[in-house]
Length: 258
Image (cartoon, rainbow, N blue to C red; front, side, top):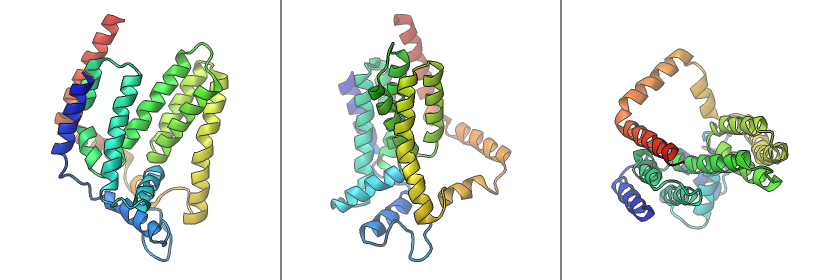
């Protein structure tokens, strides 16, 4: 089943080869200027943080320094992260049917080639979820398990700002489960890199938040934002509705066999 899922995912990625999101070039410009010695900036002069995914940016810059073409680097990472998601599913012994659902999700194959951090963020979320579940389900989870979960959650938060909310939910879940030793290590490992980045952001850019955050959260009414969100879901229903149905079927089968 994994072979079939991998084949389907490969076909989907190939079909998406002509798609490249223009927003990706923002991060690529920052990476190019950093590689060329101008620092992680958009232009000379005032330093403005125009990206919201520092971990993704660092990975692109690293590949660029190794000589990988910067327009190719996001696609290399996207495909690698997509394969990594499959690996996590396999290690978690997920139902074969759920792997087929994963392989046929249009969003994963499209964004693996689209140049943005979407698939990378999905990987860190999947990994963090698995590690958190293992902490909650273990009778006496070790500090190591908390450290691994904290590292995955920190990677998610440094890949997308929404990862901070995910980390809060995961931490509350571990706290409710009273896995205190694991929780302390999770919090320590999570806070260290996130705090380090915020310190760098404040000292280098002069602000804790990227410029894009201000553009998205100011001057736009909350109710209008919610309305637009539901409108987007309705328009894009053909891309996600069938995946939701398939996931519900997979969940029903899981409960039936457990």
